[in-house]
Image (cartoon, rainbow, N blue to C red):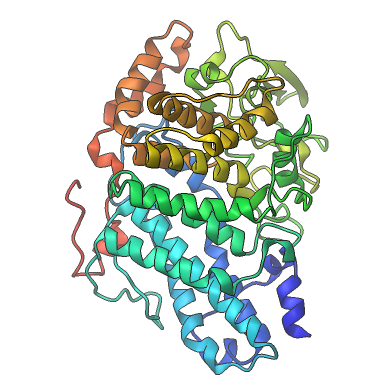
Length: 524
């Protein structure tokens, strides 16, 4: 019975607070304690250094669709002016390796615990191995060569002296681990949420990993695109996931994220990081999506506040020009309004931005605090879940992989793109059979229209080999556009700092100071 309960429980698993991973006799004494340890392997996903804040606020804010809407910061990751001592850089590195070590400890000790159902043991092992591999995918995507630690350290304050493994070896480890455990985890249909690892999650992330391997810097090309296509097609052929094609289908995805809802009819969200509560009523698992990236609002006072938001992320003219008439994604993703607040009178006013003079004042509006149901609303912490991967991304990867593999799109590639576009552009015509280069450009633009602000745009630009040019020449050209407000010209700062070295991060000082075997990246 215990195994069944653990298998089917929903987002409540986040309420279990992992207290430690070193006292093995205590935390690996029974099946329930093993589950608590497994929760600990998940928890780095929600950490403030990762999807809880910095992934969308720092590490992926430097792209061609957004800019850091503050003029007083001259030294930070947001504008590619930082060093290996940067705290955000160090915190993410430490957090990811803590997750890896927790997985290592669980995997080394789970065999000593008696389970009522051996299938549950195998499922936990599969989840832990996948998460360990996923953390390595993030590490090698950002830092390239990194230490490969697959044995546990009893003392997290001690970093074993170990050289970095070549990035190609890290990627091999990642895909081999993920492919090995696909059949060990549950089907997506078992859960009524998208927070647990399941077969669809692993297949979708495998497609993403192989898409990265196909492009810069490994440049494996067709063999990797073929593998990406295989795994993405596995998700599609399962018929578990589909797009919500109702008139409000796109918007509802993000409303559900704010309300802890999940549509099991469509299961369009394949994997998301679950946040809970407002950090005021006992749940200390709120994130900052919506308060750090959302619609500007200075009202943290009134009981009916839409939700305080700093409005750190504003949109570029590229976002304005990408959408065609009638695309419902534009008005949702680009906030046409903000909330002004008079601190003296406590009066809040909803005000539209002037589309003649304030196009680049508009915030990234995908994640909206107006829809939160948890009251009172905290100034910083929100219950809005973060979408790691969803079905539209899978469809677009299928289309891109086919075009890259064959040098042209086929009927399946066209159908996948049409499916995404027709959901959001009423009456739009099929894209038809385009030449390779035009279809490639369409895919790149469609990924921007559909997936903007979800933390993957910078990684797309990197794998396409266009990141440096977009953030230098592209940003400088954008600033010269007559529609770009002069008051926001500081958005050019990132162009003044970006160079080839910013295609990779430096090994953080926290690692360099304790590991005498590691060497700094050649570009740093």
